[in-house]
Image (cartoon, rainbow, N blue to C red; front, top):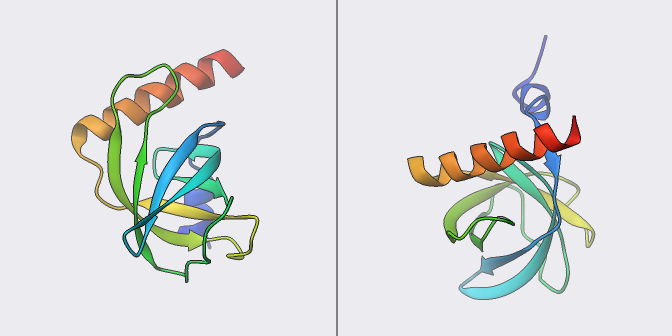
Length: 113
């Protein structure tokens, strides 16, 4: 039987490398992405405090090749919450933000194929 986590892992992921502003308790912290899916992203930690599982944080980023800034909320969903990184799930993307992410993933999947 598949769990929600195993289903989420089946989402298309594209490798990425761009910076994200991650707000923790109202303080911005710079993080670097590893991969992106329609549902969320994985961030490498740079210099920031650990965030507990299910913590809700704010993100600000611009996908490479786009000119729109995405502001959204995300929740910590997986990862060992170590100094290396953490997986986040988007929780309030607008339809336009979801479209930007979808188009970015489709373009990058086509390039990788």
